[in-house]
Image 1 (cartoon, rainbow, N blue to C red):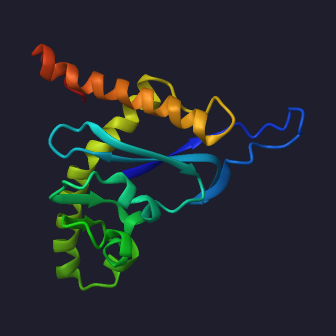
Image 2: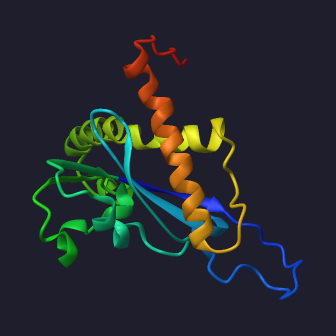
Length: 185
């Protein structure tokens, strides 16, 4: 599971002379973003998106973790934004094995020998988590969905549901047609 930020227009050139009230700001690194987040759950084997939730950009990733699961998972991989996931009460019913990335700052506090082992483990986790990133690449780069087109979360969520269905079709076409996947360099 993972989440991606989607920008919303910051323009106030409308009758109300205000930004979209359902979109919010958040800071990622040193950059401020205004918009919404798409939280997705992706199948480990096929890479297909099975669940998608849309929230304002200021919603924490960990708050939507339970909504991104369908309930039949055996293993869950998540990035560092999901730290503390196992302590949340809505995750008590989930019987899946959780693999959440460690924050870099916590790894630096360890001895050098342990750091090397942890880095190898985190690299392995990241290679598995990259399946969800591919869906975002197709959505943003190939379909060009960089900025929200509508006011309000409901309309944008409907559009995202359709776009993620198209992402799934694009990813599944190789399995359906028997075509060879293109190699990316």
